[in-house]
Image (cartoon, rainbow, N blue to C red; front, top):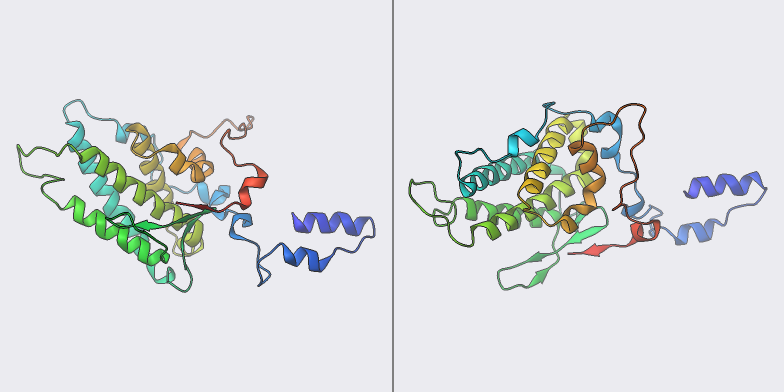
Length: 251
């Protein structure tokens, strides 16, 4: 936008005010993250997938399977796959580079068991997430594997908690480490994993849409069948207004 305005000013012979322009950026002259171009939305990257079929068929509850068993199996699988996906770029996600757990215009804070709010670096946050998920999915009292063992009454709420945290990790991967993912040629794996995860949590209402809305632009591309070439997709009803794009949300 700044380059566009500068071009217009120069057309009319008006010199742009460099001091004013710098004041709207960070002290180092870089644009705020909310204004950065989302590379992961470019068609050359969104079209890359590991598989190309309707993911809806993968997430629908089979008739002969208990709902809790299905949620447990898929949640454990997503935890392992997202943990593995993050590990591929973990060397680039350091406390110096990712000083906060960010995704789009959101900063995530960690809340401990007592509800204490803590701002931490992205690698610290991800470590908290993976440690908690590992503890839960390997607890026989929560994720039972023995025949006849009952799931606790709190099972669904714990699955929702895990899925919410895993979404944060996926969002951070796209927002902060998509370039490294592309360099490793793993964008197809990430796209497929993200789409599968979103379709799954939508099917069983496991993550509040208010939580996932920051990635709605990507979700609509990866989870919605591609429109016919002659059609132009309508603007998303949940797209943030220009004034809200510079607002940083804290969660």
